[in-house]
Length: 173
Image (cartoon, rainbow, N blue to C red; front, side, top):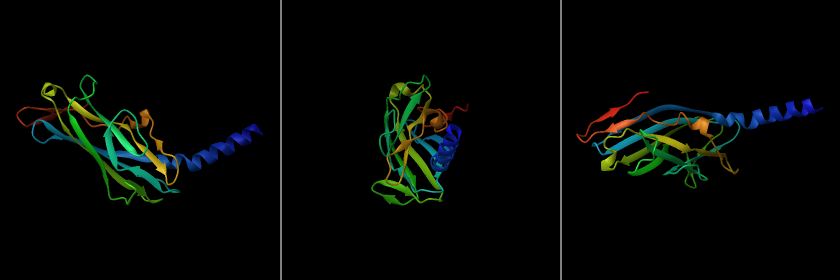
């Protein structure tokens, strides 16, 4: 009897929760605008075959996801948070509702996290990279969920050096 209950719970879990994890990072990029300002982008997709998904429009610096806000950090080569000024937003062609994207069931949504970062003078010799720290999503009208830290590991850019001469150097792993 216990094994039948376990099988039932596993099948139910698989049918409801696992399809929500149809997500992937498709591209990352980092480049310098003027030697002090970097543009970081992370492109990713989400899809669910059974339910509409609610995805964040807002993006803020922070350590963990907060409701319907994607959070990110800029880190230097030592793994310390960047000291400069950052502004981010999530872009998509998915329909907007209440300042969030609503992804219809069965449709693949393409998203781009766009972050502009202006470094401080003492960061001129440090490589910098963007790392997503929290990516919440929800089934429509349900409490938000979030990707876990191991799932977020690929939501990062290559490090970039912002050089005073206006050029940049991407550091490939």
